[in-house]
Image (cartoon, rainbow, N blue to C red; front, side, top):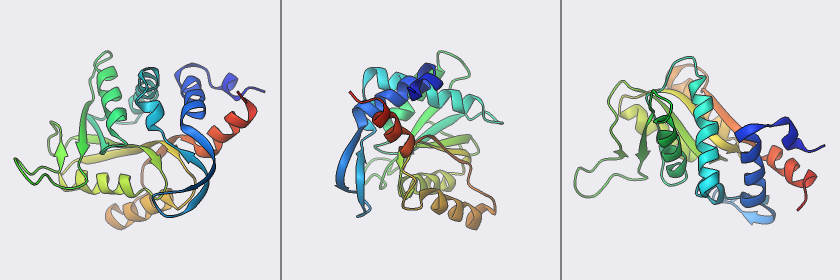
Length: 203
């Protein structure tokens, strides 16, 4: 059975593109120091012209179905950059628009000294996005910056969850400690889903 047959439209095409372009089997050392049997570079998909369009479509569809509309979407540079841009541009074609913002890894040492770039306002409802969630360190850094800017975080969404290193648990722990509730975290794909697609659809 071809797994993409059960995933029609942009999501099925995005799954195929991630499997073909971004997923590699082997032995790899991750940024966290852990050793993995595969490597995932989502930027090879999100920075691709067609891949970026698909990513924006899939994320936007998810955001449009949230119980409460979000006014902006952002994440930690640079994994989130192409995702944020794709969502913002595509949302302008089907209003209401969703503006984008980017969280720097450190405050600017010159000019305004801002940590967050983009036209956001305190109190706005936002979603935090990232490409890959492993330990969730990038998402947590973006969440903390957004919270410090008095933004209301309605969702945390990643393109691919690696299902290892406790990323989801780390987000939930942080959320419960700070806001006494579970983190509104979701993933478009699980890494295992991409791996199975590739194994069942060899080139």
